Image 1 (tube, helix red, strand yellow):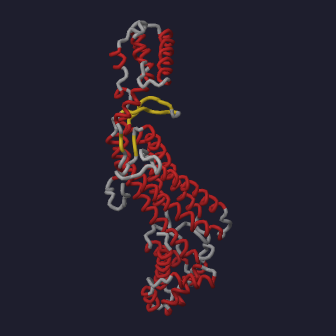
Image 2 (tube, rainbow, N blue to C red; image 1 turned 180 degrees about the horizontal axis):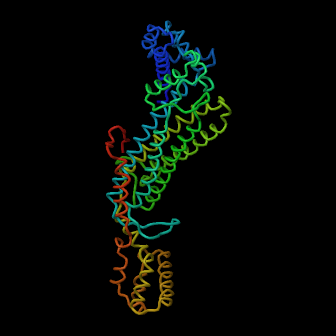
Image 3 (cartoon, rainbow, N blue to C red; image 1 turned 60 degrees about the horizontal axis):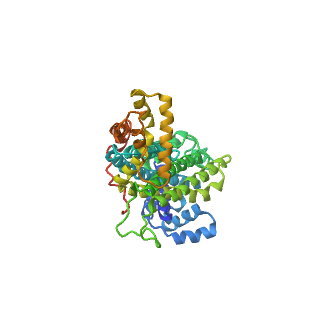
Amino acid sequence: MFSPLRQALTWRDLWIALAEVESELGVPIPDEAIAELRAGRDAVDLERIAEIEANLRHDVMAHVHHYGEVAPGARPFIHLGATSAYVADNAGLIQLRDALAVTRERLMAVISALASFAEERRGLPTLGYTHWQPAQPVTVGKRATLWLQDFVADLEQVMELEAELKFRGARGTTGTEATFLELFDGDGKRVDVLNERLAERFGFAGVWDVVGQTYPRKFDHRVLSVLAGIGTSTARFGQDVRLLQSFGEIEEPFGSSQIGSSAMPYKRNPMRCERACSLARHLCTLELDAAWTASVQGFERTLDDSANRRIAIPEAFLCADAILLIVDNVASGLVVHEAVIEARLARALPFLVTEQVLIAGVRKGGDRQELHERVREHAMAARERLDSGFEDNDFFQRVAGDSEFGLSMDELVGLSRPEDLVGRSAVQVEKYLADRVGPLLEGYSGASAPRLRV
């Protein structure tokens, strides 16, 4: 979409359309000239264009001259009334539209994969964390909805951009349409029709209300801001998976012949998530390019946007494309080690139900304040024992042996069943998938979103 050849062909499509619509509206352009433009459309010699540009030092005029060489009968009418922004900006908007469509499909694939994972694991209890410290249990599926929700927000923003996207049209050198007003003998209605027909031919709902020489670079910033948002979602997802993989709970897919380390053959490094996080940082920084570019567009335009945009916009889309392919690949093949999840939860679980233990002890006739101190002492002793290298948490054994609580081991275990401690996690997953994700994915098959090999 951002290749020199694709750009050259799009520019020629714009010149053909401009000549055709101008002719329809009364500008005297011979039919033979328009036919010659169509016939020469695909005869693009990028080396010849580069040769001409080296002499003229103007990229658009180099293309105009080369097009005139392959369609000499149409030469007088190529680019008639237009400024460079007619082809450069309108082609740029076509690129944005098409690239956003691909990004939407990539996001759909990620959302579909994460939704399937969340649904499958909606009821599997796991240790929750706040401040990177053990907290109230959640479920694996509920945690996945946190990742999913970020990407859903990205998708909705991409769709908003698509709905807002307008064509620049043929508006003249400073956006006043003065040249086209002259072409149409002062008839402003024909200028409006020209722009309406051009926008329609290229699949746009209309043109920007007002422009300078270029369409608003503020929109470029909005686009790169949304793409940067995909970077933040990816980095958050990738970091969580990397940490979970270090715990041994969840892993990204690992090929049967994959090598984790050149020096340590036993390793299963989370290289895909690491790569996605690395690229995500780059994507997030590209937003700054668009912000600065939009901020320095003085008056009707300056040319210091051009070189920056030619790098920042394609790189942002290519980067978003790459990381979404990786996230889709990882999310579609996440490996869950339930035994490890259960063991890690069991190790922390007794500490997570101290309030329930206090309440149960009070119901047995104990004094809440005295029991609180005993719970604290038993918990600290159990924590010191774990810190000394013991794997099992003996907090319940200590409480069961304390007559002040009057609680048996069976009663204490009954207070700490993981499935009773995850609240409405499973219901929240089901509701979110049904109410928010389902409508977004309605009609999505994934057929148009190529996927990476595992």
